[in-house]
Image (cartoon, helix red, strand yellow):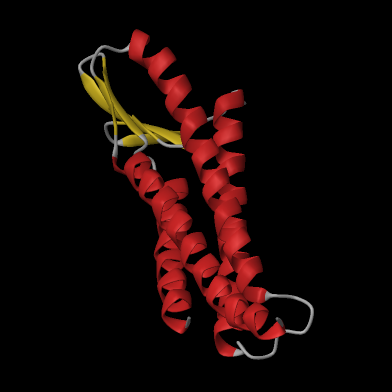
Length: 173
């Protein structure tokens, strides 16, 4: 049970770091424009030697940013509750911290999955037609890795919860 929670905390910790890096960096996409390679993130776009803040309030950027931030918050709160469950596993009162942490990690996974889906759909449909030479870059890729890690964090915590619940429910019969 503790090994599941430890694995869940490890995946969640690494996933949260990757979410922060992915959200904050400017390498979601790279493309060639006027014989220069440019790259952009959720907050800025960069030309050789200069970066500029996105000043337009474009709906898909706003949605992607919002979903990434919500994912970060859910994962961070899940880590805090997960640590509380790991340290004080035997004191469960009416609030099951293991179950709550697992749900928060699944919520985090859902939000980052929404962010990645929105960004992917718009980028492929808009930039794919506008620029011939473009590609997703490393910030985008680690966003997808964060999807997997937050998902497995939820799985690990749900397994720990089930291991804790099954002996308790079999003793009741």
